[in-house]
Image (tube, rainbow, N blue to C red; front, side):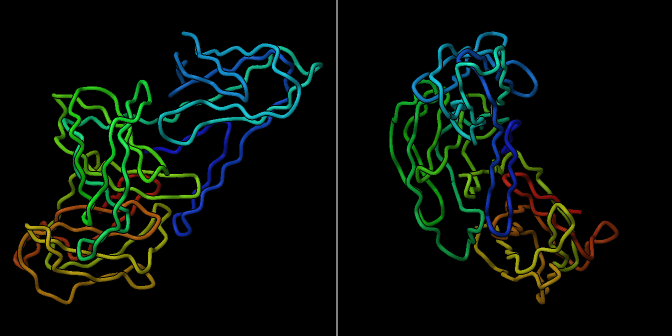
Length: 312
């Protein structure tokens, strides 16, 4: 998921899970227009809201407002999920005419899946522990009507009975929504989502969209860093067997370095997590006889705000 605004500035701190939004300000007269774009193209049918009024964009992405009362106001795009773009307005009877306020729709695509079941887990969830339940609401993506409720179990698993093709949103603890499109021919059968929270709201990572990384190593060791190259201390490194039982649980040191003391042999799922980051998920084949393509060390870069982690 991308947290994207054009007229607003967003800064996210992965360690503190803090988020700061600074919106633009405009002086306008009682008549003005708003242009909404998505990925640089006009967004038709977007609903733009202001206190006491709303307007829908035309084929050119424009929404028009007339005779707005003088005073301070806030205008924003109504979105199903993500952080809505907006701007502060100072409306006056003698304000500038013919002002166009640029707004953006979040660059979020629905997760295409064949069913409304699967797993929603916190970004710091460990298979060796239990997760507190999340309350879930299933919402129709067109009418925004609530269809059903559910909750996750201690492993993040859930299921809605609804399987009718269409656009839906899954509200998580009423803190944010995951947009899902049920399609019979989707590549993915079930949802596999990692979520996190900032003061701006919920972000999520569709694990099925991340590269299915595999590596061969003599022994599990390496370093955990962030996208800037800074080390990530106290990250949790977890190995799971074929039945997803946790068999190795270590932490990175102050320089982000980690190393297993066990001589494990076989193929394992590797998860690396740290609060505020998107978890890394890969497959590691451990064997001292792995050969020339075997790594002696790996560098894991954790993603931020719903982006995939990488390894090299």
